[in-house]
Length: 149
Image (cartoon, rainbow, N blue to C red; front, side):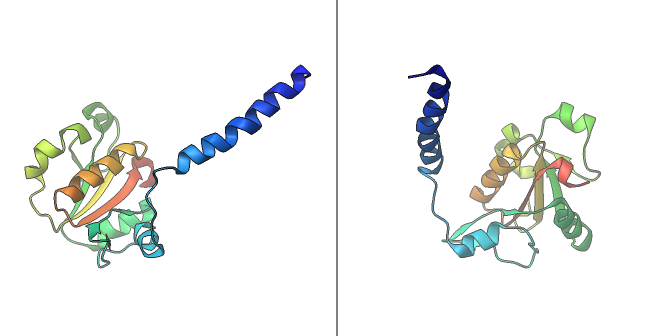
């Protein structure tokens, strides 16, 4: 076989394996769950699916609207201190995700609206899950600080 065909053939063989691997062990979600997780959320919505509270992913614009139109809203930055010192949203509190479980006492109101953000979205998702598993009810995951702009 000619060398110019080897790479395309390898790519054709590997691509389906990668795609199948990405879908294995992914929990199935109903249309209702997907609607609850999608944007256009408001604090009056119920975010429950199969008896588990789930975070609502919001855009920066939606997060800002929630922050500006509601009382008892917490902006939670779950990045590290150096990232916070470099850039943060005014009025936010810093609890790095690695310290969140041991510092939950700093967030005593489990009914408060909490908008969680980090740098890229991974830590805010992890923090949202920690909050939910500890009984917090109104969790909004803005994902990245750069969505706030």
